[in-house]
Length: 277
Image 1 (tube, rainbow, N blue to C red):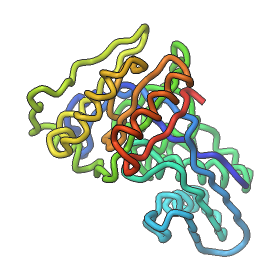
Image 2 (cartoon, rainbow, N blue to C red):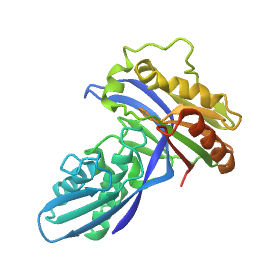
Image 3 (cartoon, rainbow, N blue to C red):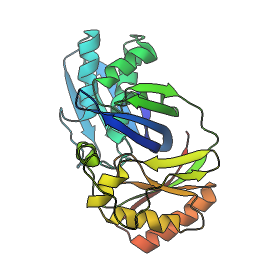
């Protein structure tokens, strides 16, 4: 079975405080975007999970969230099966775009279909919550508010579509580190953390403060994007390192992406996509 596993961006991300379980209470509006990995799942009688990815930088063992998803599906259903998972990677790792979480959700959806377990959205989201905080969002793959530690998903309509330019420098940001630093970080002088409004949209991200403090190229990218005529808002997605610009349409986004590539150089990963899918 073959599925697309879309990336996401956080249009807003507020951290409300530390929870007793060690996680952080969040409120985030997320939307899936047209950038996607391609997941192929084959399952049959047997026991064992094998993962292959065309990106050698991605774990190909039990540490891969796709493999974790298959094991969690077994734990929940009691079914014994042999799973072969192939990942055609298009979403960069450590980018704040949810690629690994989306791959894991796609595996759950595929196994539920292959074995006709009919777990439904609620059942799949419960399994997904045991894998990672972003995984439940990708079960339905529609715009939604994520609350709690990210496991409570409340679908919400977007007031229209967006054309997006994604820029990722050649480094990753570790999500647990970013959350850990949130309460002790400081704003950089001159960096803009103010919520941005465009029409009915509001763009803000509380994790910019700790991440910008260490990765000082990111506020430079944000400032540059915000100064471009096509950019309606510029923000970091999730814990980074991807920065994105919201544009009026795809033509504007393509023009901005070409200029960004010329300005920052070929080491800056760049993509143009749409939201929602």
